[in-house]
Amino acid sequence: MHEKCGVVGLSLPDEDAARPLYYSLYALQHRGQESAGIVTHDGFQQHDHVGMGLVGDAFDERSLSGLRGSNGIGHVRYPTAGGVNECCAQPFSVSFKSGSLGLSHNGNLVNADAVREELAGLGHAFTSNGDTEVIAHDLARNLLEADLVRAVKATMERLHGSYSLTIMHDETVMGLRDPQGNRPLCLGRVDGGYVIASESTAIDVLGGERIRDVRPGELVVLAPDGSGYDSYQLIDTGETAHCFFEHVYFARPDSVIDDRLVYDVRRSLGRRLWEESGVETDVVLPVPDSGRAFASGYAEAATDDGADTEFAEGLMKNRYVGRTFIMPTQDEREQAVRLKLNPIKSTIEGRSVTLIDDSIVRGTTSTQLVSLLDEAGADEIHLRIGSPPIVAPCYFGVDMASREELIAADRSPEQIEADIGADSLAYLSIDALTGALDRDRDELCLGCVTGAYPYDVEGEERDRDVSRPAVSAADD
Ligand code: AMP
Image (cartoon, rainbow, N blue to C red):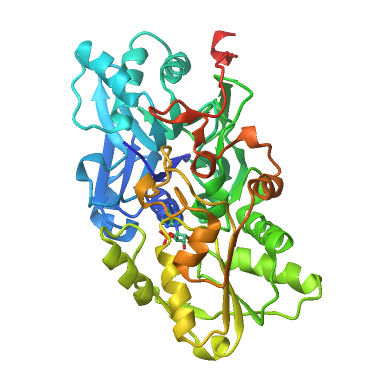
């Protein structure tokens, strides 16, 4: 099961962790709107509250004040097409012989079913079909036989796939990132304590300071009194598979990932888009909000090259319309785009227009927007996209459509241009993408744009052979 989410963990000296965790979850709201939850530990026992909906709906004063203790973890869960999933709201919390455990997971395991089956054979009873419970059971079992760090390492050696986790064992909060570092996870300092979160915006909101990314294969253990942290490089393959789509769409532009501000990366992708396929038009329009940084970089590069073009807001977003992407039917998704975005006629009428977005998935948004701009009287409509064509699904934590629904799965850009009805369409190349991210191809997960994946996925091609030699601080 895909876990498309945001995670956080926090240890403070004596102040309750629940409220700051709640604010951090607000800062990660874009990573999940289906449910939100917090688990804390007060030194004696674990407290948890999980609610459906947005962070602001999932908690109230009563639930927050019941979450006692200065250590805790939190989670926001991404919705999937086809409805809510109460069974899988997180953090997952449970008490075992080996103590209490809480887990928040972002990512997706590839071998969860095999590990679940094996544990079920050993007598473990499962209450959900989620990956996170599998990790919890395996860890609980290992904790019976080993200290914390060795137990986590043993669990890590069994898991294959993508996971950024915050874990709480009794009152000890930890952060763990899979050996290929597929999903982001970072570490920061807040007043008197330490925090681990999917994105640095969750640290910013607490007035804290980002220290660094958690390294692929690293376990960070926070001191329960907030005084510091220990780091253990449990697995070091030296090979990464960072998700490029975090930089393109998923992460907030004001987050820092890999020591780079996501906003700057998107602007530089926009600049490269101009360099590769720039067309001079009267106006450059972003699709709000996803295309904004790309369009600003694109328009700036165009102006630097002497193009006579204006960067303007020509589509206004109704901020009260929820997420259109995951609506179940095509009709609803089409209607929702019009509900969400409305053109400013005076910017568009009688002018040639370049419309810029980060990505095309099913093609619903671009098709609708091209016809909206056409109705608003645009002379020419050129579409420029800040990522390569999405040709295959994501199995590791980003909700993409299925292969049948992906417009680029079986069509060339020329066919898509005709389907969408634009005067021209150009995507960013994979080389320009890796160049802007300053990464080699084999340091990234490019599965959705190449159709070959860095992990074993049944029925899909593998793009590398990730070896797993372990260098372990736990063995020292
Ligand atoms: P589509 O309309 O299906 O072509 O989807 C593309 C639009 O949805 C673009 O405006 C993207 O910014 C946005 N988008 C891309 N990927 C996702 C995703 N995984 N979840 C939600 N929105 C997305």
